[in-house]
Image (cartoon, rainbow, N blue to C red; front, side, top):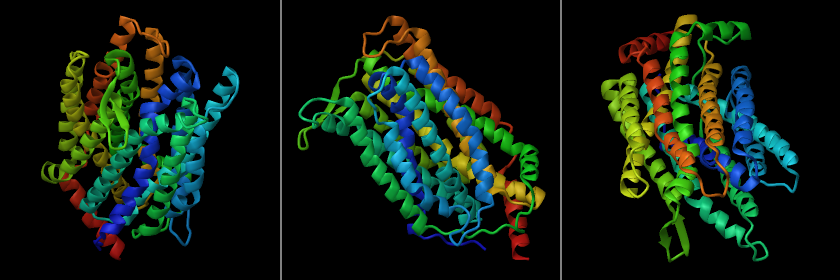
Length: 463
């Protein structure tokens, strides 16, 4: 039966990703910068920490998926995690951006502990949240719509964080006994986002409903689940495409703050006299990118309904590749071109993520169609795993490349470092988009095949 979803439930589902995306963008675009220019770590040390902590966290995701699949409570399989983990998520998010009065070695250990805990908590709440998409509705079109709501709210949360983080840091940094304290400013600013995230997660829990039940209750072992996943060819293809797409996204995100501070030489771009707030070029660039992401999300549903998810994904990644290569040749003084290319590239990037999440829901149906068993949590955990792996590789590469080029925090950079930062905004991300195109070209679940699978599963569930 195809259930009609009300607006409140669509919005509620979106609020869940708005909560996590505020921190996801702070991590992706500011955390490396925070560790090098505020917390006091070297770029190479931060890059290595990202690699070690995120590899473990990526492996942790499927474990969470398997546990969630076997969770049975009066609130369902996946919704309870939104209730249980909301407060820990906000608290540990704050601690990640808190700078303790410790030696360099002590701060490095503190960073490893808090960031590892943050990523594990992120998995514990976001793998079940993502899996929720697969059990709210059985209709592929409704899933794409829900995925689009999710992405719109995700980027809205990102815009909120990126628009407010620097003004809030400046405000709180100057409020402590009248003396500028950037570390205090960061902690105070992130505490506000933590409170908002907790509220959003709780609303997502309260206003959504799990409807889809498996054809039969799962009695298969973890080994059986892994065997089914191992044989799932579409899953492998989408895993590779997702990892490559996140490499593209995470390198650009991680390098953006450095690009404006050390290459463009960031200066005030917009002063809002009414509230006495100034927005930097970095903020304008990042917020413009998130706004363009939303445009991409709005466009993706009608386009994918017309030409299919696979073709829409291919089109977006090919365009992102072309414009990413072109970005390298833009000079620091051509701000209009910088912003224009950012807008186009971000439209392409924004359009692929709702497609990925919707395609993972389709793969969950494909797995049930092939095996008679449903493992929604495990399959959706793989999408989170691909995000983490791509983010791991991209984040580690960003730190290592800065170290390799000779980056020194809070200093004038050499031409070699500046050239490297430009490569990290253009050529290196384009390699990720090319790999993503190669993978998705082999994706076998066409629009017609999905219609056949959906029809058969509906008949089986009605029996």
